Amino acid sequence: QVQLVQSGAEVKKPGASVKVSCEASGYTFSSYSMSWVRQAPGQGLEWMGWITTYNGETNYAQRLQGRVTMTADTSTNTAYMELRRLRSDDTAVYYCAVGLIVGAFDFDSWGQGTLVTVSS
Amino acid sequence: DIQMTQSPSSLSASVGDRVTITCRASQSITTYLNWYQQKPGKAPKLLIYATSSLQSGVPSRFSGSGSGTDFTLTISSLQPEDFATYSCQQSYTSPPTFGPGTKVDIK
Image 1: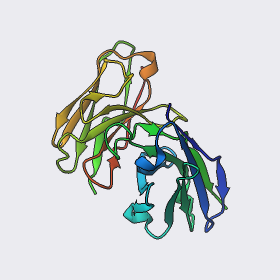
Image 2: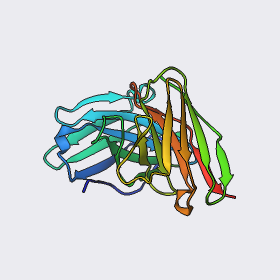
Image 3: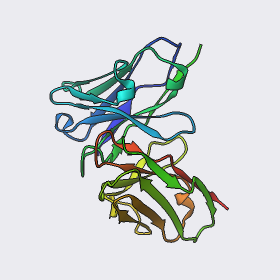
Image 4: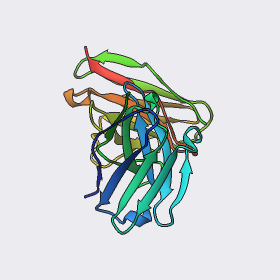
């Protein structure tokens, strides 16, 4: 069975960086792109970007360009999302998500989420 | 970016009720429309993809319809486990975008 297991909750100060991991199992990691989606408290879902895991090619949401970096380690089947220069409005639950059955943007498998709190 | 809107933003219903949620895209997305169910503290769960195809394991009381810019999610007979937030999402073009969600709670 497909599993995406994310790292634990983080508390960061404004201006700091955070790196969230997502370990995949149950499918061929390098055959599917991994997306990251976040959800601020009480808000809707926001796609942050994706990484083509076999070659590391990335595509980021325009509003996060310059602050976000996504990487993938095919030796450990783990994807990472690093967000820099954190602001209070980056407080959110961050999910990794993958589309295995239909298309890359049809997210049928999700991690459990990682709460990132940005507070001074 | 394609903007997704939903109505209503919330609704109260009873077990056994028929519930309909509407989603609208800011431009045509043909039938590249997905629906997700999310319960508090949990990750979203894909219910319906490509407007009307049920994800494996999803009960047949859930159905979807529409094309172009207007779409509908229907729950034919609401069950206790269906109380949740439902979000639509277009997968037509990058970036994929989500609606703000519709919260279904108990009347």
